[in-house]
Amino acid sequence: MKAGKRMKGVVISKPIMYGNIATELLARNSDHTHKWTVFLRGPNGQDVSYFIHKVEFKLHETFVNNNRVFKSPPYEVTETGWGEFEIITKIYFPPVSGEKPISLYHMLKLYPPDAPGQSWPKNKPVNNFFYDELIFSEPTEEFFAMLTKGAGGPEIPLKATGSQTFSIESEAAECKRLETAIGQVTVRHDEYRDRVRAAEAEAAALRRDIAALEAAS
Image (cartoon, rainbow, N blue to C red):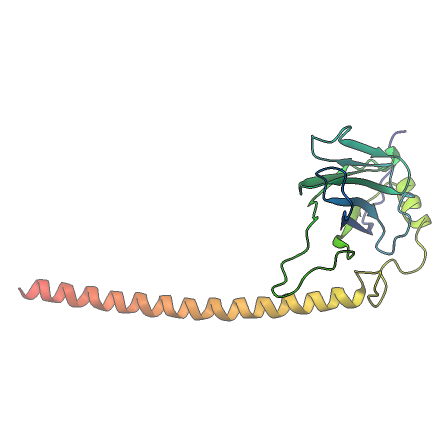
């Protein structure tokens, strides 16, 4: 179906969460060390199929049928393995949207972060989650109807919980950390700029002194 008329000046965004979860295999029948699941879903685990046509996960070429395509949820792949590699998650939208597919990239993470002096519990999963927003500028009228039809209730909770990684509260905290980091970088930048200016002035003075000595000799 051909895309229809676009809605001028309209911008709509839809939040998504993607990534993987991995657990160590305690009983092994092969060299595989972990069981993992790569996924795409809403931040609250909600269905996003009302505006997505299909999702393709591209795994490492050593996997049988390494391009896994899903036309309905859940959009996820579960496998076992021992190595970490880049996974491409490609999102396709309905033909009436007139939107090009979007590709997301992330490294499959199996092993926990280094924690000096601490051991990672054997049954504790390793979560590697990412939050993003799909921005649709001037969507077609048909696609706009799809995007708004499935909207109901808050898509991102106010506060984080044990099962919910992303929230408005955590987003605000992240913005605050970024502001603090930017402020620290600005201070260091100003310090180095002043030191460079002082060094340049000192070098210029030395050059004048050398020129004066050479002229006098």
